[in-house]
Amino acid sequence: MKKLFIVTLFATLFSNAQKEFQGTWLTPGSSYETIILANNNSVIDIISYSFKESSTLIETIIAQTKNTITTIVHNPKNGYKLKLKYKIINKNTLECVFTGDHNETLIMTKK
Image (cartoon, rainbow, N blue to C red; front, side, top):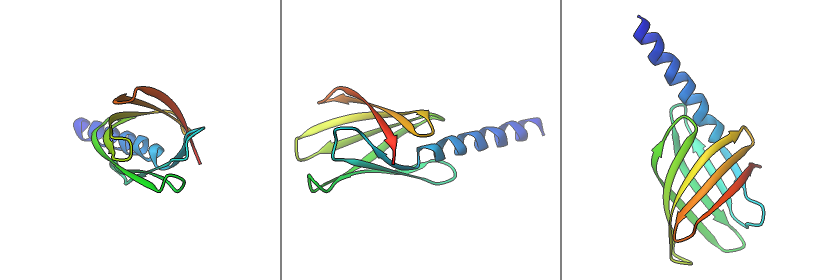
């Protein structure tokens, strides 16, 4: 019974943390908006789009923890192949660390 309680508690905490990622996120100085879709158990899609650039980028999720999501993406417009790690700072702020063909850390805010 104790093990069942611990598993249930962990699942609840994990699912609530993943829901914090859900929403539309903006980065100052960028024309891209990032949409993060989550269900009760995990983040299921991350899509970045820019009407100005006429571009849509669909990220592939490679890892998730309670407070982080790691993805990979290829931008055919500039040829960049990137690994992105999103981390929850608070309910309205994410840190996004880019590594690969471009290295930068950005702060994203919920729209």
